[in-house]
Length: 326
Image (cartoon, rainbow, N blue to C red; front, side):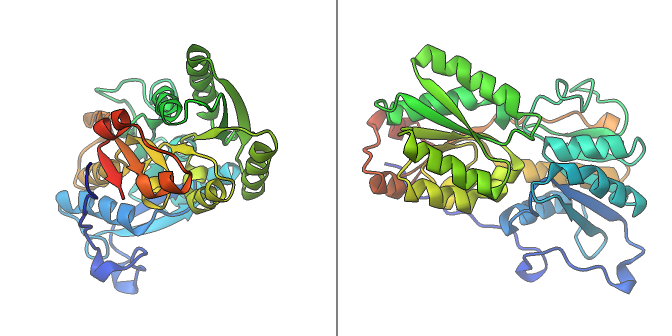
């Protein structure tokens, strides 16, 4: 059995959990506009972004500042927030996840944009080429929205008696439709029935878990979405309350008490995003930076949570897990 991995996190400016506030003396420094479709990122990912910047020779608060804008899951706010960053004359925009990236692209054709998106960047309309993106947009595409089939297969192996599976999806996300279609195709092969559950706000998430209990839905797949990521504590708490085995798209859910995850390493993606932003601030053009497609995925299991669900994790799953939390 694998042990818990110990990770050391790079701390920016004494471990501050927020970006340093710009002072009068810093106002001449270039500004990175950070557009979040959910809430601003936690410290571990903030530090990862800062690590990428430092690899390019930049430090937040020393030779660059950050201007945050967060939609808190209200995707209709993103165009106005992107416009604010353009009006603020930021030097580059870092856009977290597809809705934010699309809003940034619609807001400016001149300010460089570095996106982090789990979707197909060509199919989503962010770039026309992976190797040589044209215009002012490039980024990191870890493709975690395309891993739903594997998520369902792993969940089915853990709870084979669950024949009806819930899918928690934020339908306001342009990725939601194809994620659900991929899961439906996989479900047909596995002989499973899927019930799509709404998750575009806190009340819908609460209601969806109540629906799962009423309909005796045996397990849950949580789709990749920025708002759902920002509501991870709510989702994990509800999964525990209703005793629903759940599969998540990112390891941060499992670290916070979720059952299992299969997806890209988000921290590595934030490092790469920060590095690209730093390279652009140092003079690189987005068209000269190919869209990065990290191929590393990680499968994480939380045995403590499995025990709370009275689940025995099969040796076959333990053997392929990248990390097991005990």
